[in-house]
Length: 128
Length: 128
Figure: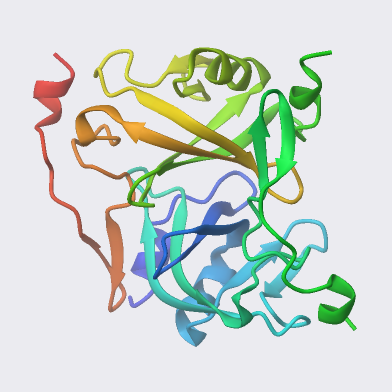
């Protein structure tokens, strides 16, 4: 019965939902990933973001290698219950595997993508 | 040549990218939708959000019925170039077809989804 809320999410034909991670303080959109039912259940249970890695086909506890875990303060869904929004605190201030704060660093400027956010830490230092 | 930036986006196997619309002022995540290449090209061209409606299988100029268009101030992609983030000004202050400011109004609270945002306008008033 306590899992009714998980049934109310509209999983896609692959059993996934798109998930947006937003900084709870600044409102910055930090990253985008996918969750399956188990990932969302675990996220709620442990209070840290757990995604489904489509490339590795396994649960991915964000920060398991980098230490850049995401403390989840709020879980939301949208009007169709088919997208999840997490409000998080980003450990280490770095969400992106490139060493940037946010994954959304490519900004369109006169028909070119410019890197609009600095690298805060060399990825070789993050993933040793 | 001017369309190189469109080629740099990694469209999925259906030719789509997930797209997040964020209020450029407040940082609120207002909605989530999908774009195909034509939608993104048109968005950039007209400066208003144009999505691909998967259910209706056609281009969807957001606000075409409701008047709640989205002025696009910035277009970003993420580290893998397979997600788009729009920074927008929301005309009428209402992004959701339910009459709420944001589509992300369902908040998880002790294993239940609660509606955490007020309806600002009756949808019957929006879609006459």
